[in-house]
Image (cartoon, rainbow, N blue to C red; front, side, top):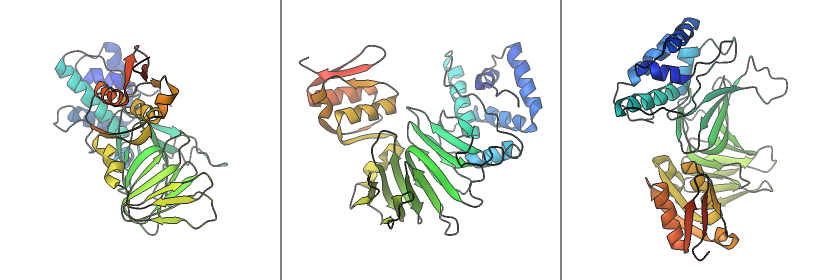
Length: 348
């Protein structure tokens, strides 16, 4: 298998700054597979259109099938390196480069700076050559929009991962979520859509719903915006809870499902529109949310302060604005040492 091509080579090629070595590497990559030329043409076109960056305009599986359809049966997929380092130069070149990043991520995985990887399956006895798993990653400070091959649309929040089999949609429609996702599911009674998250399973019954299941020890939570969802602990013998619009289901550690009526659905899904909602969280929990959203490390230095509850709603706010608002309300202060943001009581 050939080495994956560093996307920055394409970046420099489209910006007119490719070196002779870049040109040679690109030429070899194009010669390896006729589909690579099609991908390059799509990227070139995307750098000159007026589509907003991050627009939900890519069908991930359709693009993958079109560009790499024969790979799954022959070998693990090569992928473009999408490390988000971008050299700055003129505004025009920066615009081209960020469109290149967005286009590559869209054509290969999803809108935003993400990576589509292949992992060996976790089921014992399953062959990675015949059943590879696709993984879409939303990096910290990023959101990712994914359209699966069945038409189901998914929005992943920062620091989230979605995994599914390469033959998704043929016999089953199971995905695995780590983090937070919003699902607009195309219903198919013959092949239910299931989301597995931290030992819980949510099954679509014709639905739009959000799931929160970060690896921080908190319970899996599901909020239904439309339709209904069956929610249960995976493998539990108890009858699943059926959630209707406006209900929240929380899977407790003992496997039971606690249902809350009349929740503010918009509060739970407003993150898909860029909002940051901190509703009744401790400051320590809020620090984790803010750190994930802005890709920073925040430490609350005082134990008592860390337990204080905060409720705030931000939209398109800068990190300093968020920190200023919270610390002012709590009688605290914050400082950035260049590596970590430390929040402490104002009198300390």
